[in-house]
Amino acid sequence: MAGQYAVGSLAHVSARSLPWFLGYSRAMESESEKRLGFLVTDVGRLCGKRFDDLAKSTLDLTRAQCRALAYLAHHGEINQASLADILDVAPISAGRLLDRMEEGGWILRRPNPDDRRERLVQMTAKARKALDQARRVGDEIAAEALRGFTPQEHDQLIALLQRMRANLADAVER
Image 1 (cartoon, helix red, strand yellow):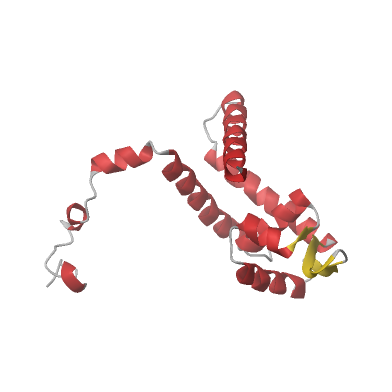
Image 2 (spheres, helix red, strand yellow; image 1 turned 60 degrees about the horizontal axis):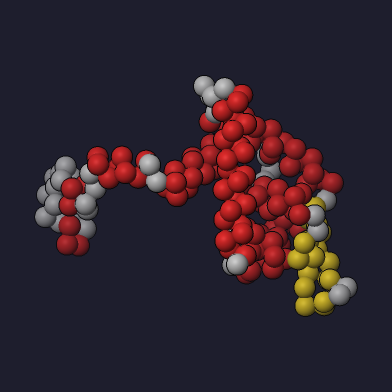
C-alpha cells in the first residue's frame, strides 16, 4: 500500500495519479490563475497567513480581533449585529469574539438607548494603540506583496480594487 492513499474509495489511486483522479491539471491551474475570485481569495489567504506570522511577536490580538478593530475604526460605534455582518460571521461567533475582546479591555459594549435589543460596540484607547501596531504589520505585508511595483502601479491597483468594491457593494445592496 506504500505510495497509495488509503482513504475510502481512493485506496486504489496512487499518490502520483491523485491530482489527475481529482480532475486537477496544469491547465486548470492556469485557468484559476486568471480568475478574479480565485486570485483575490488566495491573496487574502496569503496576507492572512503572513499577518499571523508577523503578528505573533508584536500583537496581543488575533487576526479576527484586528479585523474587528479595523472595522470599528472605520465605522465608529456600531451595533453588534451589523459588525457580525461586516465580519461575515454568525452573530453568535461575533458575540464570542467580542466577549474575549471586552474581557481584554479592547472594546466596550453598551445597550443602544434607542433599541434595548441591540448592543453598541466601540473601541477603547488601548485598542487604538494596538490597531496602530497592527497597521504597521499590515504595511509590512503590503510592502512585501507589492515588491517590484512602481508607485503608479500601486496607486492604480488600490484605485481599481476600490472601484471593484464599490461596484460589488452596489450590487449587494440592490
